Length: 333
Length: 175
Image (cartoon, rainbow over the protein chains, first blue to last red):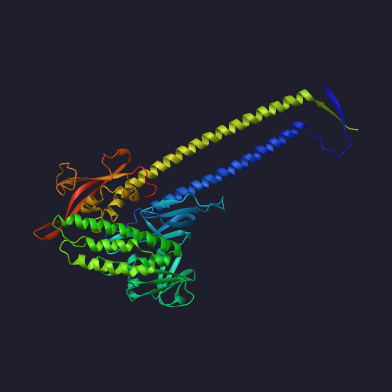
């Protein structure tokens, strides 16, 4: 059936219903396609960032110390990378978590991929670090036996101003070079312009000020803005102090440092218990150490660690155990 | 006065054609998306499996360096006295990111005797956190030094023998 329609409006655009229908549906398809494409890109970016975070974490696996006292390993990423580091305490030993954003030309605004957890590593760093070059410092924490390897991650340049001789020789032993982003200077004015300054005396305008008890820097604190991060250094098997936590305090955020410090002391508690059980186990087999009681006390002190005032008690007990172990014919560790 | 002529039947037919076309296009793109998603998922699974294998391979050496296993800060050495204390404490398995580990002395000789508190140190195999053998698919092994303190006539020394450590790690995401 054919029907005649008359319209008076001369400005009307002539368009059949089929065309209108096609335009509406076509627009819907295009919008849906664009939406799906953007979602797919986001998902791909999330996936890439997650895989990269896993790769970043896997890089830490070989960074374990055994005979050596510590090392710096430089790592170069393919693109500008932002690393997010979180630390969580839980009922067990807590976890370090790493999330990552790799900048791409297509997606500017990004969220990090899934965070990758590491249970038996202690990752000290600022909450967010950005760069193409990263450095990993691995230092053992011995109290008095090795409790953990501390992995310190940083990016950019740090200038250590007038450090005590112990820190100076430590940094040289770790292997400072251009690629490590570390330099030692006598005064703040000699530091590179883009470096963060770490001063070892009361100098104003430094990014961090380190206050050591004595030339060997056994104990002390790092002041960053209004926050003070207290540290206690480990012991060598000969009973000397070995600087380890001071570096963790310098390169970490306050929350990250305090959380990881608690995690390490939890591990020390478990290891003290393990060594105490070992002492009892071997005592019946011709190796009587008599250290089980002291190790139980050390475990208790480490387990009760809450803040800086508990540090010296742990240090003194560890030193005492170390001295007793040193003179044993059958040493426990 | 302008005049429009509308053919109802041909309009309905065109709309039907278009709807069929849109459904066909939609189904086509859905199929393409599903094929892409399944390919993507399988490549992701492969990547995860490769990453797992790679990680397990490196874990044996790493495990021998952990303070719970290591002997006197010596590389690739395990302290058998510590392992005897640890071997039934499954809480450490989760922390270390493994399901189980078997350390077997292979040199100078091995009679295949499993270590217990009663026969130690006259034994050759320590099973950590597991009573069963380790499935080969999830296993990785390395040579390590089997070390302990020995006291003879009041004098102590470190005795190390050659051993193989096999670990099983099915889910190591948190390690």
